[in-house]
Image (cartoon, rainbow, N blue to C red; front, top):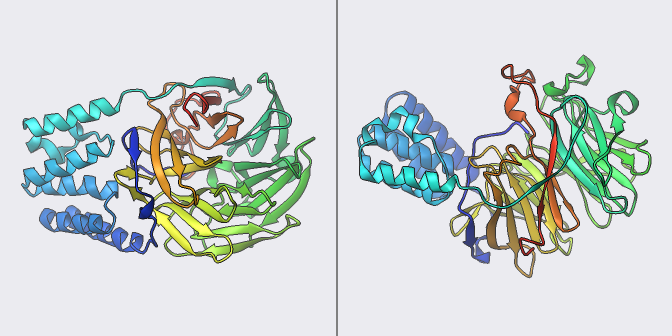
Length: 433
C-alpha cells in the first residue's frame, strides 16, 4: 500500500550468498538524497550530483539516486557522466521516461542516449505466463490481500475501502466471509491462513481509504476469524498514539506465532497466544517501510521485505539482523508481498516500472540469496499486483489492486471507475520451482 516509485531489475541474476550484511547505510544515504534534491532545486546541479554519488557509494543499487545522478549530471553539462548513470540504470533493468524529462534535452541526439532508449524498449517485453483464476463479482473494490486455504481450496480476498473479506470457492464462486459491521474490521490488508489452528489472520488499519469513523482514525490491529464459518475469534489492537502507523501485512509461523510489520513506523509487532494483545517485537530505526514477512525454511529467522532497504533476515531468538538490499546487480528493493515455497521466496515488486513477480532462491542455510529471476513482468493479466499467496504449485496474486486510482488521502484520483478485482495465477511448477 501507499506505493512508491522504485526500482526494477533484469530477468535473471546469479548472486553471491556472501552479500548479507548489517545495514547501517539507509539513513545516511537518505540524508544525502535530501541534500541532493535541495541542491538540484536551487540550481546547484554539480553539488547535487556529488550528493547523489555519495548516496550511491553507500547504497550502490539505490535506483532513485542513480536516476537523480543522471539528471543532475546532465543539467551540470556533464554528458558523459549522465549517460554512464542512465546506462547503469538500464543495465539494472529499470525503465525511465527520459524522453519527456527536460533534464536530458541536451542528450537526445547523442548515439549513447539512443542506445539507452533501446535498452528501455527491450525491458518492456513481456515475461512469464499467467491465467486469471477468478473475477470478484459485485461492486469493484480496492483489494490488497489474498490467502489460500489448502484444506478447502478456497481463496480469501481482502478489501481496504469496503472493510471486508470475500471467499472464493475452487470454482470461483463468491461469498462474503467477514465484514466491518459484524467484526469491527478496519481496512483489510494482508491475510494469512493457519490451517493447523483453523484461523484466518488479517492485518487491519483504519487508513483514509477505508473511510473510518472519527473514533477509529489511525487505529491498527490484527484480527482472526474461524476458517469454517468466518466468525470473529480475536482482536488485537494497538493503543492509540500520535505516531503514524499502518499494519499492512501479517504472517503466521509453523508453531503458530503471528508477526505483523508496520509499513510506516519501524516496528515489527507480535500477537500473543490468545490473539488479544499486539506488542512491539522489534523496533529498528534502519527499518524504512516494512512490507511482507515470511520465515526461513527451518523457522529460525523471519524474512521481512523493506520497500527501501531490501530483505531483512532476523534471528528469531536473538533478533540479530542482516540486510540484503542487492546482490551482484539484482535489486531487492521495492518488494511488497513476500512468500516462501520450500527454499524459494516469491516476491511481488510494485510501484516500479515494470511491476513484477520474482523468485529468490535461498542457500542451504536459508539466510542468503543465490539466485533471482523474474516470473512475471509486463503481463496484461497482472497490471498492478499487490499481495499474493502460494496455492499448491501456483502463485496467485491480486492482479489489479488499483491503488494508483486513489490519492493518499483516500479520495479517488480521477473519474475512471474501478475495475472488477482479478486474481491471477502463475504456475510455479512450470517455472521449475
